[in-house]
Image 1 (cartoon, rainbow, N blue to C red):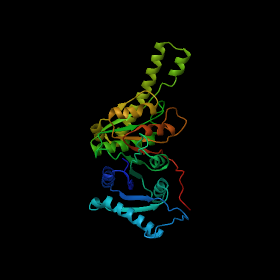
Image 2: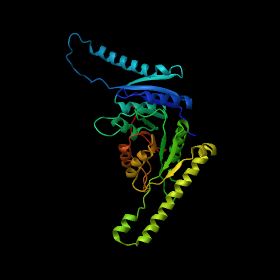
Image 3: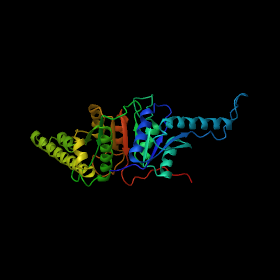
Image 4: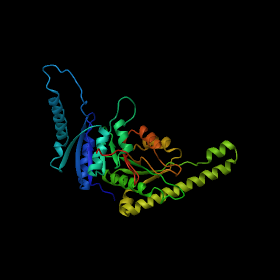
Length: 324
């Protein structure tokens, strides 16, 4: 089962971070991983000429004070955990999501964990920096709903595959999704739900053209469902091999096949299950009908109100570059 070695926790000063930092520390302990707690300070305005009142310290002193305040905030976050493990602190300057991704590239972090921004201007849970990380960070990104419980009750693992080749297509991505979801379910004593959204692709076309009887249509839909059901079952048996019989039998994961577009059925299904965490891929290969890719993944994320652990497929290359 995948284990993390280097975890980067990103400070979110406008959020209640108690549950998020506690989870990061526990993950580091359970994985015997290195943990870094970091923050990003916006860059000073180059060449800015601001007329300061006489009693205000010089600009350089103000910058030093800002750095000192941020550093003290980081020390405060980790203070109660110092006896449990060694935590490294890091303070970066620049655009928030860019510097986080560059830190991942420089230091080979294999997980970024961060409280969700929870912007107040909309009903969305994730803010702009969150979405940039979900799109572009090369390692898994765990966005923690700050008002969430300390332990998860139900974990939804969203998987996808080609029903004609369920084990071969996307196998590595599905394996990472399922291993991480099952690992967290075991850790939190949570229920595990494997969810695969499916569609009978020719149903609408056949209906619109009136070229099939209702009996024939029902037979076609049932055969399509059987293909997807078999694929999900095969994937669950793969999970049994990956984590072992004892862990699999203890979890006894539930298999779900909601019918419809992934962005239409997965978010309400997460609500129905009262899922505390959704584990999903954010980008997948093109060329296979029904995969969660690009805009579909973002449409799902926009509607979720729980924590998310988002994973990129093998071979993903971030568009962010290290500065020369």
